[in-house]
Image (cartoon, rainbow, N blue to C red):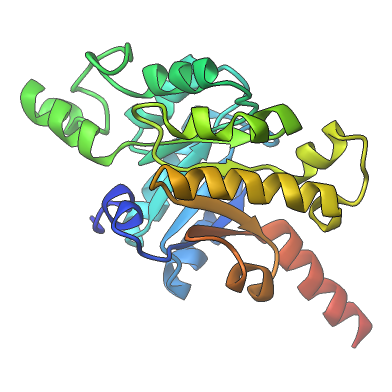
Length: 246
């Protein structure tokens, strides 16, 4: 198993990942072969089939990279299952308030920090080989909880959300943010950039990293401290367009 993402991210490493939707086990393995640090499997805007998700997590672990899962809005049952399958963390969309951030933390952690249902016979508990104490300690030390801020109100509340105990990082969804503001230019809109900068400043003030969704190396180079995740659909579409135009 690779060194856990949480330890590396909170230590200040610049991690690189790929955002993908299932089925994409080939891309998961390719990401590992290429040297990326993790994949983010999108179960919000893509299928959330748990058997397929397990297979993607297994493919990632076989190639020595970590897995984050983006769940749907307010889906604690999917959070539990994704983590039981062996994902190292969750990205929770549409978090607008500190209370919603606390709810995300509760769904991902065992008591006393959360209220996630406990079992050691899952993949994460080595099918029962882990002790109760060992599994509790391992989960607390490796599980990442990353709220996704996708409205102007969420970015305005970023300081409060970042301060929630158990929130490890923040991520902004630029497309949703743009649409919520009545704009159609995505991250290129100056108002969207300002809101994203406020969220990044809040994370920095709280001593927490950002997870930044990017489409190019240039965007990655200018992203705030933390991890970058390349939207592989955009990357591949650009590559295919270049090939088609050749």
